Image 1 (cartoon, rainbow, N blue to C red):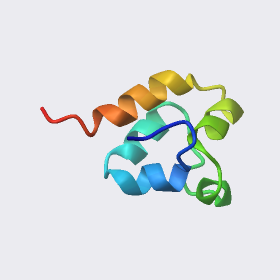
Image 2: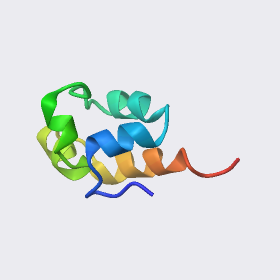
Image 3: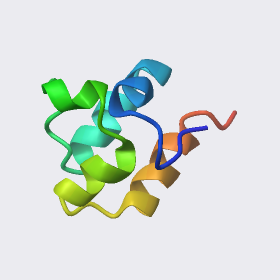
Length: 65
């Protein structure tokens, strides 16, 4: 499960489609240095992204369909 405290790099490594979702929500700094230390919550705040909507979509990647 991805939480607000999950680092961006951990989220990216957790699922191949995580990059797509982050980019779709406007988190274009996926390759920046901050991605290794910034949390999902901090990145979302910096980019004025609804963190709850982002987390919902990221965590849906892990729900079996």
